[in-house]
Image (cartoon, rainbow, N blue to C red; front, top):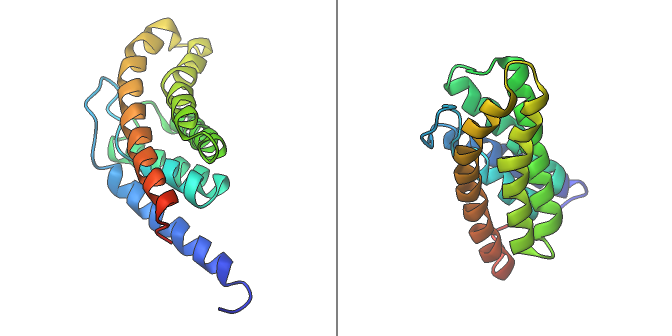
Length: 162
């Protein structure tokens, strides 16, 4: 392979996982929010297997795909904020899971399932009621997405896929 082929490979993987994230956005997890879905699993996996930045990008666009398919129920600006939280949760997973996979998974679930909705307590019109309503569904969705990514990543570490 020639010089720069590693960058092409990363770009192709970024596109592939972003597309998988868009497909996952169509598989909704029932909740009062309407947006939890399997959109972030590819982002979590990419953050650990390819790179933290790549996984964060996949998770960001994955959430936007989910919000789009649900009709942006919280408004575009709020979903951009949520997408940023998703990117952060994927980054946490990617940074920690490479050395301590179970700890990375637990931190990612807490980041996305508790810390992200807690930030909305401060926003007018959301408060504690939104936090209480959103947290259970987000914890379940986070655990499913992170758990799936963890299983894939542990398999990838044993026998690399790419």
